Image (cartoon, rainbow, N blue to C red; front, side, top):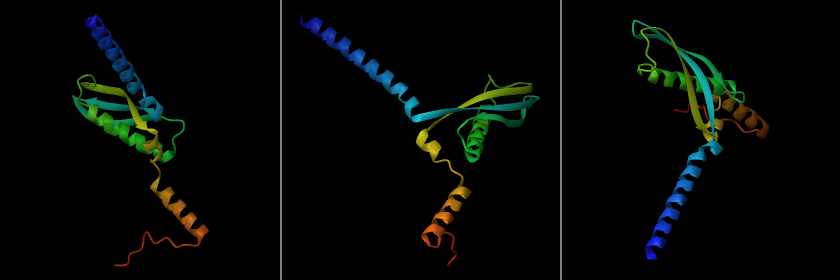
Length: 137
């Protein structure tokens, strides 16, 4: 009888661990977004001639976020250029790059010039001077 209980408890433990693993594996979808970008690598004589960004698919991105994500897509395409499945003797290889980023990190991608402009506007409203760029050396 105790053997049946031991088998039953072992089976329940395995099921609980399996369900927990599935829920952890699916949790990234709740707090992150996935952005797709197309890149194109041009090969000539087994050598890379150029890597170009074709398009970033993001309807809710600012211009600066599109540029930042495009730079990351080019970086990843550069890292994948000599993988056997991507390499060509001559021609163009198109790559779909998928970038997953947390919503918090995505929101933190802001244009530094725009941030400075917002600080100046805020400082004009409060009447305070912006001392962040003074050279008092």
